[in-house]
Length: 313
Image (cartoon, rainbow, N blue to C red; front, side, top):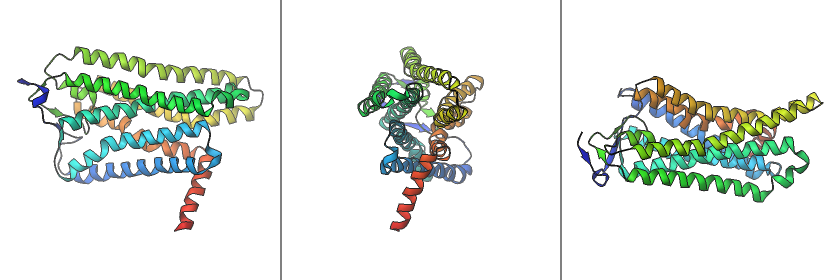
């Protein structure tokens, strides 16, 4: 194929999830608009509930509110662009817009990854070292962990984005996806992508492997401590405080692993794009339900918040 320098590339073509024009405006517009609104509303309620209820001003809910903010941001980075393209029947995204989307998706997905690890460490400190919990999880450390999460994710995203700038692209600029995903953009390049692919594997091994290892380490110690508890009530209470977080962890990493396994066993890029919805849209929508339905304190805060809003109306 004919190669051309990236400065000559003005836009990419997002093929979306289906070629059927009848499904585009009806099914996907309504479906993704509904999912987006549920994601925004649910996570916004979590943030408002945590900020308005003094009883929830604890490290666990501080991390949860930041996780909800990351969920809102990653959904806003991808879904509105797709909805606009469906409505105006245009599938293009500018070169700068595509690279910007890649960068922000990596930032917020990486932040979620590190925040889940910070939440696991918080549960480890609460269950394994209850007498020293307030000293360990002090406000300074909590803010520091969030800032480190955002900083590392931003550096990682900028590194990948800058490496994309060195690539030359071909005349075929069709992305079989509803947003610009890093590996999909790299596959369009005509120049050598070895360094880009190596960078993906190295950074994924470090920035995904280390937090996941921390989560596993924390829960191994939590299980060990819980099994030594003499009271069945204490065992239930300990596991109940970890249930929501463990569910979100399984959903986040499970969907990511599922997508990459499905990509490995299928040759259809379009099916891979459909599968990627499971990690780029679904977890962000379900997280508020997991935390609100399984958490008595959160349900109480939501009732107070909604009751206050109703009284004002």
